[in-house]
Length: 134
Image (cartoon, rainbow, N blue to C red; front, side):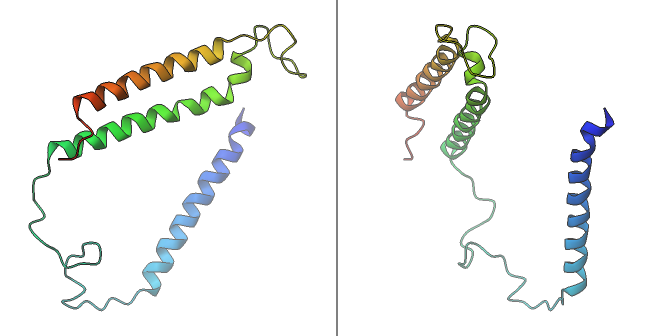
């Protein structure tokens, strides 16, 4: 049991060791020389314009949330793609693949239903004007 977790523990140890080394080396090699120009706020290579506490339109947050929702829904397609062969075979999958005549449309139908729900949600959002940036 403990042997199955060994690669994960080794990876975790390597990542932690690497992070500590990188942070330690950067702390040892940096020479801080603050001046008024370095202390100014930086905004995409341009001098800052306006107040940092400016209010954004609700549309900005709505589009951001919609992007996250549709992005996460597409991530759900990855496990489906991995398990597609098992979902599309009516009998347990053998080494030679799915036997002839045992192919099922269950896996494809599952994703088709998922995609229809996704498209209906997208059309609803589009018709409501949530993607308009006016």
